[in-house]
Length: 112
Image (cartoon, rainbow, N blue to C red; front, side, top):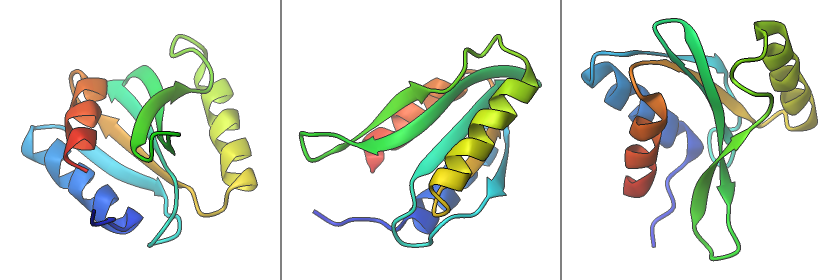
């Protein structure tokens, strides 16, 4: 099975989001080849879940909700992202602002 680089996957996610009428931006660029990917979901500026792409025991990648509750304040989410970035400097952080961002991520994740 072909493994796509993290940069390719992030670019693909951004294109998919923009094609669906949403906004996407890279908040922190990680390692082009093997960096983890954290997606900050929102809908019209209202915070949604933080989703991270992780390697599963099955040998595939899965998307898991991580970090503080979406209802928590923005500072708590920002602190979580800062801690993750310090622990893993190869981490990509991508912001998506689109209706039902978690569904878009799940559909995109199924392609990879």
